[in-house]
Length: 370
Image 1 (cartoon, rainbow, N blue to C red):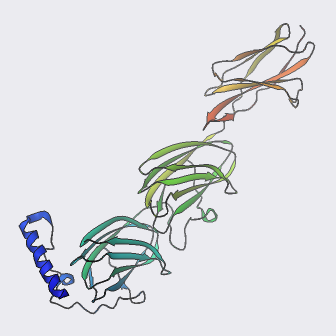
Image 2 (cartoon, rainbow, N blue to C red; image 1 turned 90 degrees about the horizontal axis):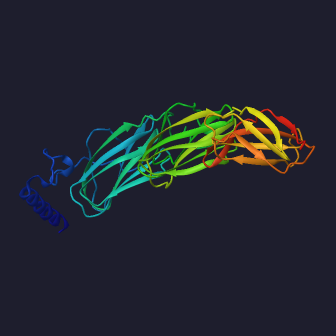
């Protein structure tokens, strides 16, 4: 009864396809996988141990007995790659599953379709040995073609050697472009770099994966310095202030079930603005009043003046901030008569809302005589 139903259904579908012309493409050559009147060779790839080698770019056929089962295939990758796969069945009644396993036979990803034909693109895997199982719950014949393209990541990742932890992070150079991959079995990548001196780094990151990623810079103890999210298809140039030392960059899937694909990045570096303003003059100009003048610093967002009655500035002192970089003088009132005041000034820039201070100028002193 069941076989007759299938034959009538297939005949009806073929008639419909013929009537509508090019609405559906059918194989020009009749393949064994779709033959109803010819027995397929005995299928022995029914377990991991008997898995059949998968040949990329070649049509591979198989079948299931009544009640279905699994057909296993095995393949290896020298480095991370992108798998594209097309599957066809001779009819569709139940959901067909394609399950992927790593070398330890642990399931890492599942594809599924209810249709007679389906295609999947951009399934990324790291280097290593793998198994693929085609699973169905009824008697059906199928064929598939799998193609694999090398992802071209800067540091080769395999199941046994990867940068999934800070302790295994590869060393990268500043000002150099790198490419990384997030795969079905690779949710996070770490990279290690050195800041030679205090300054500003700028992370230039392009997210070409299929979903959002998170990224962060961490100090030598893997404490976060900065973290954020980058949407798929987006770019960011994120400046950050750092001290001299070792840092880690981490790039990860926002959702471990999504976000496979590649990303590229560079880390630019600019040494801390060490230029100190020239302190031009400090004068007692009138009754308990002092004027301070200093020179401009290129790129400054403002200046900070500190005056104190202690030459080492270790008393409470008093800060006066000028947020306008065009201002190069200030006047202070209400000072104590016959008291000596010491003055110094520094410039600052602003990165991510944080002030990045340059060096202090040399100090000058003045006695308030009137």
